[in-house]
Length: 215
Image (cartoon, rainbow, N blue to C red; front, side, top):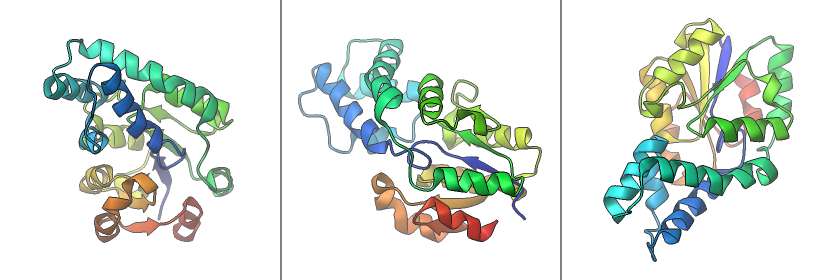
């Protein structure tokens, strides 16, 4: 029986993954990399923000600090989070269902905390979540289960009573290994991982509203 839910943010609750693909390339071009690899975002999406910055420095010979890269990328994407990024379909409807069923829920995200707060507040749903956990509190990122375990502690339930909803393969693998029930959610950017996600996740849905069928 599902007693609580931990949602991912980007690609799960908000339609933002294309932004990150474009920003990685824009940042590299801004810093003298004329033809960034088309798959650069695929290579760094499993990394923490700081590790991604180190990857850029080591692989493209950038003459700037990790802090500069972290701060600059946050600056480049801020306007999108503050003004443009929309909710994915059915988010409010699903949250209404969870409220009616008294199922608590929170967010675990690899996104900058300031950006996550900004987009959630603009979209009017920030106050609905029991918690917002980011790499600020869990710096090892989603390749390790710390952030999901932290969410479970805040929900007050065991991992096998909590649904983790993610669009990315490596996040689903991490949550599964920690004993959580998992939902793979379709997103265009992670579509190349779909076959594997469907095989390993407990459930796979094309859209968020299908979650009601397993509550």
